[in-house]
Image: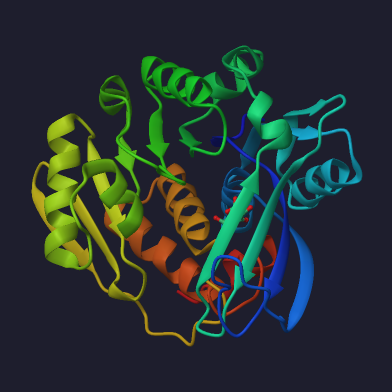
Length: 302
Ligand code: RIB
């Protein structure tokens, strides 16, 4: 059976230290705890789709190390189709070094490893997955030429194409925009993409309108505790966040994107899909780690 959603993106092993605060440059800081969990924006989004009710396939790379085997296994136990997950000989798997502070903020350094070797050709080999899907999701933790190819291919196939531009370091190539149905940045990513400061609903709307003027079909700016702002050709709509006691925001954005995509692929209207993604993300921030924090469908009471 074809997977409804295909995620083309990264798989990382997350090495997570918790400390009272994030260290400053040059500082050695004693932390409180350490754990190792599967992560990577692509893999997190695939897990979120699977747990939240839609069939999903992952296209990505791991290295030929123990982390690679664990990352693949973490997806397989969730029922993610892993035929598109390649193993790169002589290369490490992607790794993310994460520090989470007492206020649940994080700082992340990623080492791409196998993710950096995901070429357009390696995605093209799994074109049948793209053809059989309804929704295709990309992020920016794999080479940009691969993201560019996948967005263009997804658009040419008439699929719903989602780009979560994370991590964003600057503007996206202009030719990408017409290929994107839903662009889903957070505040800092919207700021990096537009050069406009994004701190609240009004500034998120200004940034989203700039992104739409560049050609993005629909834009959802996620604003953490300030909710999410959706902008399309009809105007802007704000979706407030459910107040929660936040423990760790790692993968909250991935949970939103995965939940949103799963609901969209299951035929729900956009408003419902946004609210569903928000409810899933609200649960994820109350739990530690990336993939372990992502809820299952049964946990989202109607
Ligand atoms: O979005 C969270 C993810 O970012 C982590 O799991 C880490 O691997 C980095 O890719």
